Every structure is written in C-alpha cells, then in structure tokens.
Image (tube, rainbow, N blue to C red):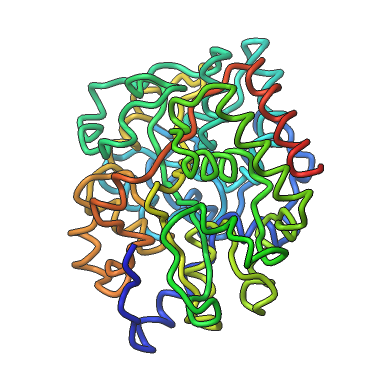
Length: 396
C-alpha cells in the first residue's frame, strides 16, 4: 500500500484524538465485568456516559412503548446516532457498552440461552469467531429481511462468511485490519511482503500478536495459503514456521497492544499490528507506517446478532437498517474511526469529515479491500487442534 501523504497538523490532531482503538482501550484500562447479573440488573449496567445518556433519553422519548436493548463494545459509536434513531423511528434504544471481552460476555449469556431464558438483549455485538460460536449453538435467530432493506449496502467481501453463509444470522457492526507496521526511515527500506518479517537482518527485532487468527492468518498468506479456505495442515505448517522463528531468537516476543511501545521507541523493527493502533500513534510517531502486504491483510469484524430469546426481532432489524444507511454509518465512523461495512459510507464521510475520509485505515480504497481476508470458521475440534499448535508455536 502506498503511504499516504501526511496530514497537516490540524487534521492530524483531529484524527488522533479519535483514533484510540477499541483493542488498545481495552488493553490499557481496567474495565471489569463487575459481576453483572442477567435480567433487569443486566440492563442497568450501562457503560460510557454517552451510551447511557442516549439510552435514557431515547427510552423517555418513546415512552417505553417500543424499545430494544443493545450490548456493544466501548468507544464504538458516536454521541448522536442512538437518539436520532429513536427520533426517526419511535423505537427506544437502550444502548449498553458492556462487552469488554468475547469470552467474558459469552460466560454471562451461555447458561440462560442454553436454558431458553431471556438475556434482556435484542442485539449483541461479538467478534467473528465468537459470533460463529453463538450461531452454531443455536443461540441466535434469523435477522428479519423486511425491516432491513439496507442490508443490500453490506460490502461484498463481508456478505458471505464461513460461520454464517449468506449472512442470515449476523451482519458486521464494524471491522478492523491486521497487517505489519514499521518505520521506513529507521529500517532504511520499504517493505512489501509479509515474508519481509522473516528477513534474518531483523533477528530479535520482530513481534507478533498473541491473537491466533491475526498472526497465523498473515503467515499463511505469506506461504501462499488463503486463511478463508485453509486446511489444518496449512495452519500447522504456519505454526511450525512461527515456532522455528521463535526458537531461533528471530521473534522478540508475542504481544497484545503493548507492541506499540517498543515500536515507537525503536526497540523493534517490524510488528504484526492492528491498523487502528498505528493511526493512534501518528501524533508521537508520525514516521510509522501500517502496511497491508502484497499477499493481503487480515480483516476482523464485530457482528450484530439477535439472540434467540429476543421478542423484538423486527425492531432490532430496524436498528440495523438505520445504521446501514451510508450517511448514518459515516456519522458513526466520524465518532469511532474504524472500517465501515456499509457501501457508500466513504462519500458520505467526505461530506462531514474530509480529513478522516482521507485515511485508508478508515476508508480503504477498493484495491486494499480486495486484499483483506477473513479467517475461516473452525469447527470445535479444529479450533482445539489449531489453538494447541499455535500455543506451542508461540511458547505459551
């Protein structure tokens, strides 16, 4: 990917103030579940004040006649959309920012859904692999198509995924990219391939992520294997390559978001990195580059689903329809700069935030979107086998 022209200082500061990634936020703050109970007390546990205030005002506006309850991640929406949705539709939206971790949230809802009990949620937003788990367990219901004509705006490369063929039970809320990050000035060269990360000259100056699908997916792409269609042997071969690089001392360590400190300080040369993190480092480390290698980059999404216990599927679908309007999606992206799954969002974002619309990390050009890959759905036995090989590879 060609490096973008630098923003002027005012544009850059505007971007950076809004560019803290959700993953970075969760990794650097002490958000806790707080032992939330299901039922009415589950509803009461609202997250950030913007979401809570919006929920309170919209519930009052609709008089409690029609309401939906939504669980999403922190810092994942702008301050206006929830209230404007209620004004436009008359449907109150109790928007709660209480998804801090996929496994943690699953632990809260697993038993009630297994027993056929309500979890007081009409929409939940979870990452691809966890979304696949809920769908496979029968914990979700089909999204009604009648109230959701804007589903036609879903970008093509996310319209059909292994864990939900045809997207009958899920649609993406937001997406992010995983590629490689480096400083071309200190490195003395431009990188183009994921395999550059294995160049012997960078021994001990490389980090990879502990997120299995991100790291393993990129390495497989460098080996000519598509993570969307890979076999178990493909995954194990990539694990073997990673293990050899670790045992030789080539890989400095495997990280969460804390690779950003070493990268900014120049302690490492190359990192497998999340696009939002590198955008967030732009103010203090403007020479850092996030690259989608020529072989491709990984795409992860957090997905909206309707739990099987919801009694308001049409209202939930109406919310999905609202946020899949390109203009509404652009407003959300302006407040939470990730990748929108909505066609036409870029043109709308240009109208309200031209500086942000310039960023390929928020508004990827078509050639970049075409090189983004989603890790295929793994059945439970496969998941166990691949995870075991990956944990061995990274020395966990």
